[in-house]
Length: 202
Image 1 (cartoon, rainbow, N blue to C red):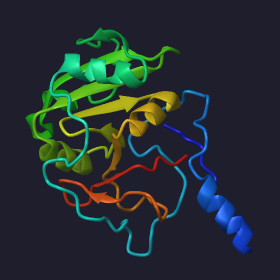
Image 2 (cartoon, rainbow, N blue to C red):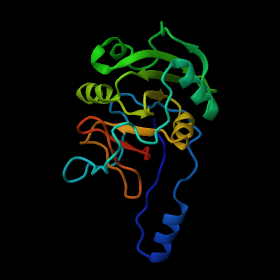
Image 3 (cartoon, one colour):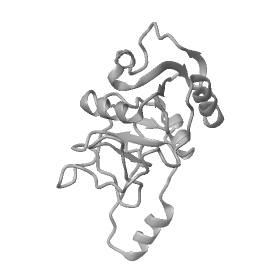
C-alpha cells in the first residue's frame, strides 16, 4: 500500500493551525501494492526504535468483528468492493498463502477477492489474533488492516482508505521502521512490538 500523505513543518502559527485543521486529505486514486512484507516506505524510526503505544483492550476494543468469510466479504462490500470471492488461490496472487497453513499464525481461513479495478484483496479469518500478531512479527512483518477477529490485505489504496474509515486499524509489527505522527492512534497490539494505528503512510 502506498497512501500519499505530506506532513509539512511550518514556521508560523497560521500555517500550523491550517495543517491541524486540514489534515485527513483525499485518498490516492492509484491502486498500488499494500502489505508486501515491510514494503511500506517513508519516515524514520524514533530514537528508541519503536513507536510509543497507548494501552488497548485485550479483547480488540471497538474494532469491527467478522468471524467467518461470508461476514468479512459482507463487511468489505459495505465499505468498498470485494468481487469474486475465491477460497482457493491457484495463482497465489494474494498474501499469507503459506502462513495460512501454519498453525502458529492462528489463521482459520483464507480467501481472496478483487476490488473494482481488479486489485487483489486477501481476506483472513483469525482464530487467535494474539498468535497471528506474534507470528507475523517473527516472520515477514506484513502490514495489514485488522479488525477484532479478521484481517484484510488490500493491494489498492482506495480499499485501504475505505476500511480504515470503517474503524479498522493498520497493524505494524516492525518497531524499527514505522514512525507514527502525533495525533494518530497508537494502540498496543496483542504481541510485543506490534502497534495498531489509524495512520497509513506513503
